[in-house]
Amino acid sequence: MALIFALSSVPDLRSGLPPLWDAVLRKLAHAGEYAILAWLFFRALRSQGVDSEFAAILGLVFSVVYAISDEVHQTFVPGRNGALLDVVIDALGASIAALVVSGSTYERRTRRG
Image (cartoon, rainbow, N blue to C red; front, side, top):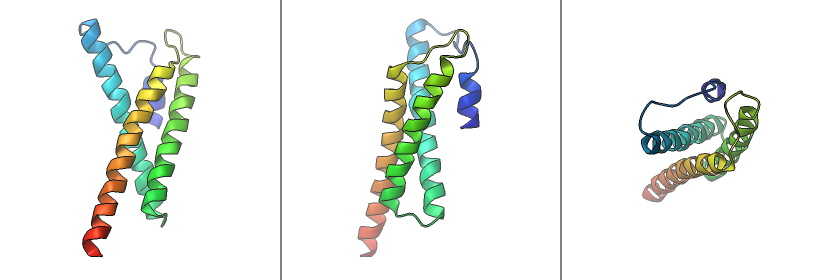
């Protein structure tokens, strides 16, 4: 979360690539960082004994709430703006992570049972 906050505080994160590639790279980074965040929330919750499916859902919810707060934060950074599309992309990344972790725990349970 601190890394996301720090990167959101940088006024210009352009990569120097052609505009289309820059946009694609940045959107993939958005999805990836929120997938990792959802996975980390999942791991933290599981370590506290929270059920796998519930931990995956909470990880997704916490990640989306943080994505919203991050976009609000960006509205206060000169040269940056908050974008609903970025929240959607962040939520997509977090959703993919939640599906992967809940699917893998479901598969492990069905193999045992």
